[in-house]
Length: 122
Image (cartoon, rainbow, N blue to C red; front, side, top):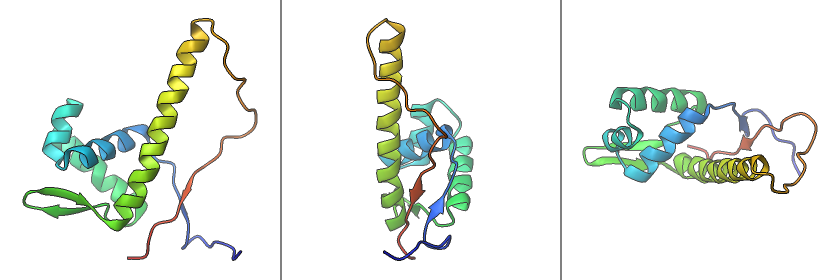
């Protein structure tokens, strides 16, 4: 198996807000509707999206007069975001269960892991 280079694999430390905003845009197909559902200004959603695309280094959405559509890189990123958000919901529900006195699995010890995502070539 060939060794990955920094150009092949990108690792980021992206804030939860950026992931929530990206997911809302993906589901709604527009920045304005995503902002309405998130109860924030459209300019804040747009700013987060531009920041995220700059960090990723590629556009995640194609812009059309009728709204936005995921690019190939956006599709890959969306699968990752959906997985991360599902994991967060599971973690939160287990935390609630632990606070309620129910038995939960013991947390793994050690340093946190970072995620790597391979984006398709442009």
